Image (cartoon, rainbow, N blue to C red; front, side, top):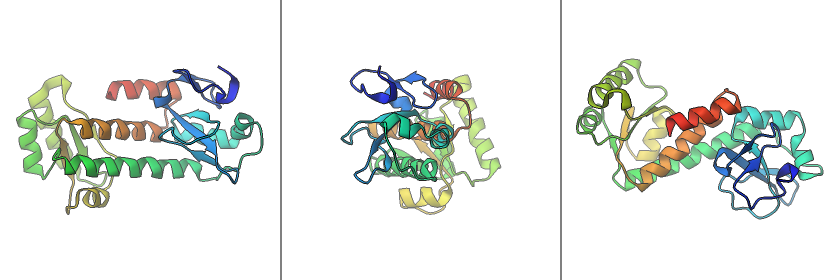
Length: 215
């Protein structure tokens, strides 16, 4: 593959920072906007020549520091200093939108007792906890998961505060939620896992392992 992501038809992309080669799902694509700004193309649909980084806030920050976008685009690229945070907000907004869609599809269960019942019935494929929720509730739900599923319990994910969960679900005081199986839940989980990997401070190789474990 040509350096800087010239070739975009194959199954593998090259990070402009680490030179690691990964599938597009593990990367972030950037294109130049008309004003020359390096713009994240999270859905990989924008026209124009793209360059790629590993899907990690740390790697994006290194790309800014090392002027890797200039090299990748073979010319001056305007790169906002807060680009890693902008990407985080975009990924977070995508997750919350997918959560709302899963809820509309009837795949989200809220309320401590209802979540416990869904776990006991074997319906829960994942548990969402509010980042500002109490540890006692998380501990009890974890115990319920282990009782029902043993060592192969569904994942417990923390990405959003309770206010964000409230807004996405149209309810109040959402601290815990269970997901039922369905296409909308699968899409949500994929996006949430990608966000968690992006936020991780681990090295790119460790991130790939973490994503595989959560998958």
